[in-house]
Image 1 (cartoon, rainbow, N blue to C red):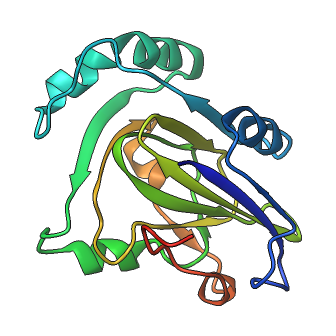
Image 2 (image 1 turned 30 degrees about the vertical axis):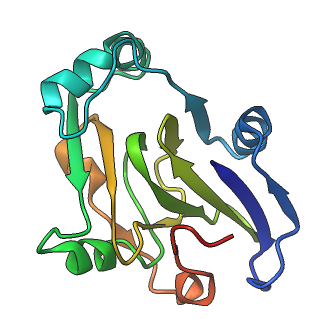
Length: 184
């Protein structure tokens, strides 16, 4: 189940706020400029579905978001626990960074942990199948797919080079919990 936990940036051990209510997650994240939505497929998606089938199942929502935000590229990424580069892929965005365009992901299957650092608070957003998150450009954050990553996500891009990670050089991400699927 999706979850939002909010921490003080200097206390990674005690969440100040916790919710699993989708509407409450969306409301709290909207306060810091982050979009959070729940989408339902228009057709059944079978395990191992091709990208075209996945995109077709969410075509209405994808087209709405593309028209609203001007995205130029939409693709599907799939990471599984046996992926030969899973550890390198996990490490790539574990440190705090930002992008020069919004980072928009829709989780078709599986899960991942976005941790946002917009001010003196840290927002930990566990995204599950059915969740769309849009992290605004230049918002400091990190992403953890866990030690045995398992997710399928639709990605949205305005410019392919706009999604390059610009790392802040801080150690804050190392002080907060890592994503361990199945843990409370």
